Length: 81
Image 1 (cartoon, rainbow, N blue to C red):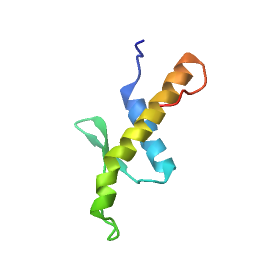
Image 2: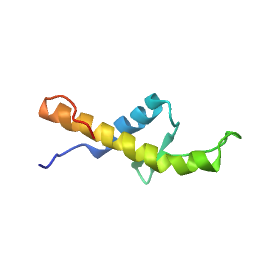
Image 3: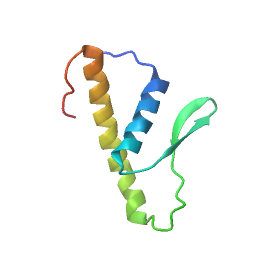
Image 4: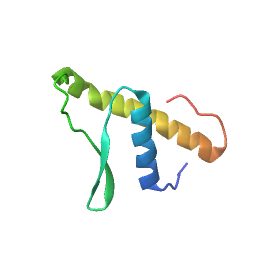
């Protein structure tokens, strides 16, 4: 099944979900007019392990946001990712 979405809105929703998770704090940026997630590691407590854990966290939260958006588009309950 194909879903037509406003990709900028999806990215914004995703950024909010990342923030609300409390696991990672990323900011956003506009690069050539496109919304992007941005990591700016300025906390001296940030370790290499923290950075290495980001892709997994981001992927998992992305699947969760996708499931929620698909459910709302279909008018049903979210399906597990």
